[in-house]
Image 1 (cartoon, rainbow, N blue to C red):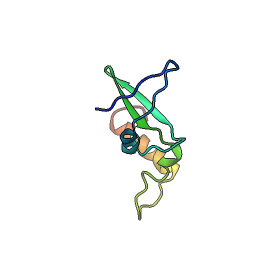
Image 2 (cartoon, one colour):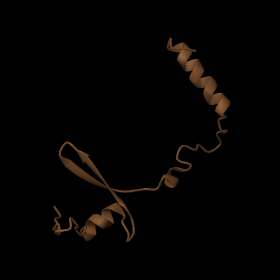
Image 3 (spheres, helix red, strand yellow):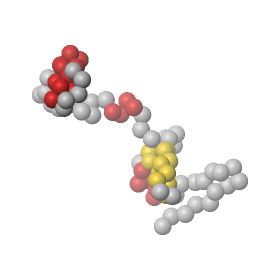
Image 4 (cartoon, rainbow, N blue to C red):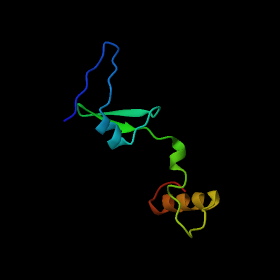
Length: 82
C-alpha cells in the first residue's frame, strides 16, 4: 500500500508507481470518484479521445434519418407513442 502526506494546502505528491500505473505525466489531470466511502483516482481523458470509439471497419455510417426511424420503430414496438 502506498501513502503520501497531505500538506496544509491540501496538496500531496502521488507516488511514482501510482503515476506509472495511471500513465500520468506532468500536466495531466486526474479525476476523483467517491463511491461508498472510497475514493478512486482516474486519469482524466479529454472528450476528443472518444472520437472513433464506436467505429466499426467496413460499416456504413448511419444517417440521422435512419436513427430517427429506428427510434420511432422501437417506440412503436414497445407500445410507446409513435
